[in-house]
Length: 339
Ligand code: PHE
Image (cartoon, rainbow, N blue to C red; front, side, top):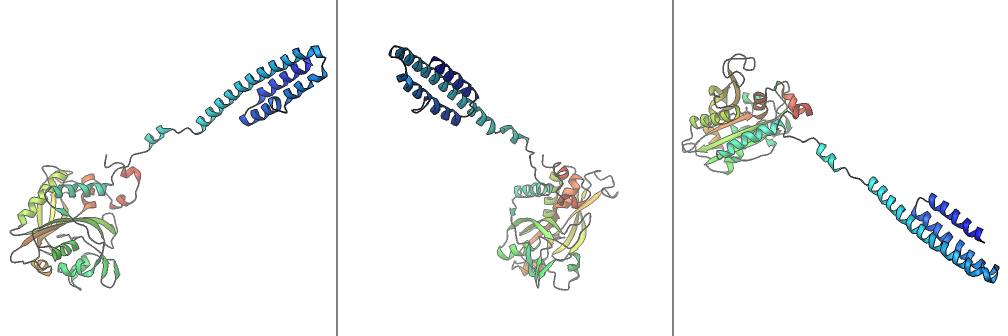
């Protein structure tokens, strides 16, 4: 019988050693210490022993039971511990990874648009936006460009339906706003415009900022002062502004505005083709015909308007040779700006 006790102890210890999960441990426990387990059976066999041998045998079996209880408890703790360790390893989250994400930056067109708008907001301009799908009336007729007017050829238009088009200029917002509001008016309108044109300096969609000021006694000097302020802040203190006579149906007189070349400061270089000047925008005094079209008394009020191309300003500012670079979304290009 003593052999039997020793055998159970040895085999149970071996099996405990091999046991590698809590479920298997539980099964093993039932097999040895359960109600119909090995130890109970051993205890029952006590009746086969002689009377005097029984107490010693009973003690030995109880000792074995105690020993096994302790071994099972220890094993349970060990298995729970390694299970927890395995879980921690599996569910590990490396929070340091997030710091490796590259940071985005504003697109150069957005950046320049925002800079210009902020400068004009500081001067008291309000910011408006209008529809990109526009009527022929606001894009052309209200701006003194009747059907068959040759000036329509200056802007190759995408037509959507009879009388409906993608706006070719933000100037339509001049008409929309003046129709609604009497002077004083001081507004800018940034937004996308569309023209059927595509090469290194033209894109079928690009961005303009329109400016409009209407009040009593507004003159060309006010226009020049505003543009001089913009130019100095965008390209540096010493930048000069020059007006050249031009033609737009909705301004009279009209001017083409040049700035001294920011690259050579007026000395002449390849960027300004040796002239020292770079053309940046169109502007002029609002044509009285346009004021009257929109219900504003042209004997009392005068105004100026300007329209600039955001990509063009960005190209000059950053020395970008091809407008198409703005729309290719090449990260190597984009990440050079907005730092
Ligand atoms: N709308 C003109 C263009 O797109 C620019 C402009 C705006 C000219 C306002 C004069 C006054 O070319």
